Length: 194
Ligand code: G4P
Ligand code: NA
Ligand code: NA
Image (spheres, rainbow, N blue to C red):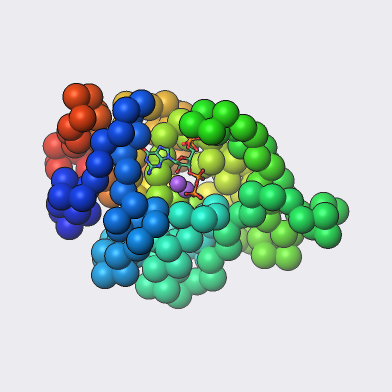
């Protein structure tokens, strides 16, 4: 997605430890026009999958997820990172280990909003080691619903997440695929491989 790649080139900041800071348009300040285009692009790519619901995880997945849901005209659910006590008996849960933060979060979705007849498109801002995406996949599977695919705004293709997801047979669509952040520089995969 050309507009996104330009934005990353212009405003992305490469931090040590292979982290791409995109606080000016995704993770702190948000660019609604870009998010709108992101939503349209995910909707276009998954238009024939029979999607009934979009699932993301708080907090930074919510913006691209709701824009996609708006275009696809389906509800969006965000998994919660802290399990409220009142949800314990009535929620699907999965544990998600963050390598970046070195902590495990229990993520949860109420059973009220995910049903076995749902076809679920999973959306997130970043795909790194894939723990969050796999946790969301687990939750959809627990609900005996169908995974339509996984839509990612920025995939760090040099980390394990993309491989883990596609090896399990899921359809993965990433709008920007980063081959490397070596030497403080963003290197994308060639457009044609997107
Ligand atoms: P994983 O889910 O793919 O295994 O990712 P990991 O544990 O490594 O990432 C932990 C958090 O850091 C996630 O956000 C993830 O989106 C984010 N992240 C990973 N790599 C990058 C990066 O290069 N740049 C940026 N900006 N973020 C990255 P989170 O903790 O769920 O936070 P939130 O922002 O959604 O609240
Ligand atoms: Na995220
Ligand atoms: Na994040």
